[in-house]
Image 1 (cartoon, rainbow, N blue to C red):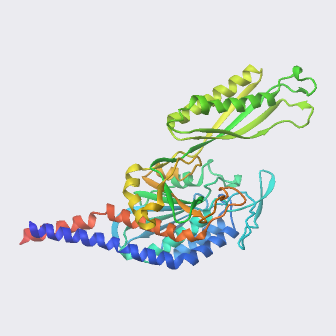
Image 2: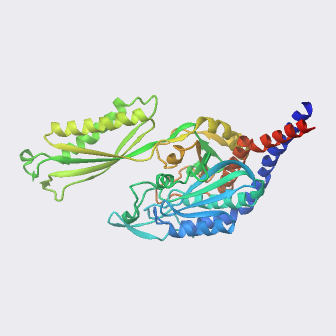
Image 3: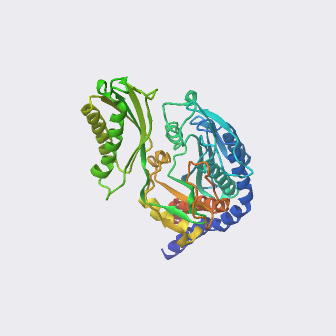
Length: 452
């Protein structure tokens, strides 16, 4: 029996060391790929593409994965690319995700690879820019694919690389499928199956987090998002005789203020924050005509299902009752968007040590709830997932431009940390969740002992 235990411990230790031994190789490979990844990122930055129009980007990704000997699936979720790397040893399936799309933003940053791409969006001419860092996500994951493919025979599991389109939404109606985001559509088309994914990891570059640091949060991390629309109908009249009509503009103003009381008076803000924002009001055509109707659009952010239901109900009540009190009517539509980005607490607790080892314990910090939203949440609805934030703010910079703005800027020196983190999480997850080789060896030892 003692001999059996000794053999089992030896096998277990040998297998663990085999996976742990990959870490120095990963770090060295990531350092060696830094300039290559930066070049990829700059190319993508100079040639941004909107949601489900990422044809050039997806081709570059697919060609790169094939060059590494990785099995490639294209046109998943319209323009998505999926790479499957089967390791030389049996084990779990880990998915790694990068989003690929840009935004309708005209770039102001003066860099040699500045975007000069333009398009027409909502009837207006605008620039196209990677104003949220998705170009860096793609480049880093391409680097991770190259790193892990180079040690394919030593991997104890399978890696599924998900290059996802349309995280920011779909901009060409002809390509819109069922009104779904890129992640939701990829999930519907089976990206989490064949082989079935056990866990998924993703990162987002952050222009407001210092380079070299990683931010994360267990449980709810980013908000659920819903789109709000309110149509108000009054009665048109001359602007000089407002008493002869019903003014939808004044009514809309009162509704905007009323909606803010939902957050300040109905939501328990000691538990979770909520946001109701009206982003645009369209109505009227002339300075002395009170219009018959107008439309309002906005966004809703919540962090919990019951809270989401409460806010939706109160929006309907506030808008309709205020309109009725003015003699007008209000029609409210709420289109459900992305769910809460939820980091599985068990997975997070197990894997944070990996990030602390790679980045340094003092550089991995718990951050507040983020009221931005991410369709990575659709993947997390299927399997446990961990989504974290990678520092991209230059050290010493005090006024970084926010995401989705013309002045958005990323320090590229943080890319190696991103590659090391994703690859490190993958091999550590393999090590923590692979038992088949040990079980098989134990069975063989028992059989040999019995035969003697």
